[in-house]
Length: 190
Ligand SMILES: [Zn+2]
Image (cartoon, rainbow, N blue to C red; front, side, top):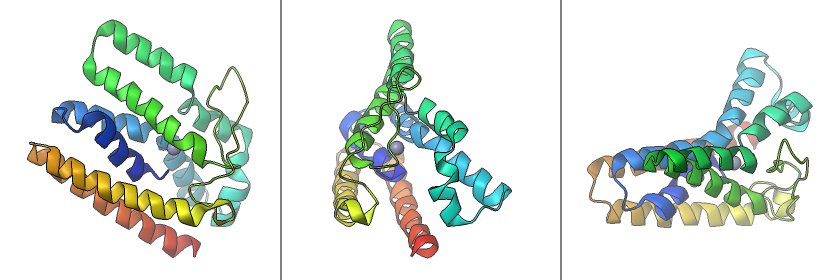
């Protein structure tokens, strides 16, 4: 799934009724598994000036980048974090790591050949799903449509059910980010 979609869905599932500080932890946990990808893209595109098609067909699959990205999608590492959070009894930290797990669970059935190794560094196993959240040759168009629909519904429900105006702003900003994101994707890739 695309990052803003993870944020809205995780907020809906885990944090509709939470106080804004806890919702911030859910937001951070929903973003962190994708954060290394943004770093990778920034280095490749802006710093190194690599053409778009090479970034995603070659450089993305280089071992150092794959290891770096998969560290943030590793269930053993996240479970370790959750264990520490449970020990310290910090609800914000617990929500943060549960949000990361939910992100991974959302990605697992929706990545084809760009699947992460969710048991890295103990196993290099990847689940290559027949369904992709973006690849048109693996139902990507349908999944993108469903993702947008899910985001609209969940954003509306969070917006309506929260008593905090800061959360409503939160949802609005993420909604705009999602629209800008698709604008960028259409501009660069189509
Ligand atoms: Zn992801």
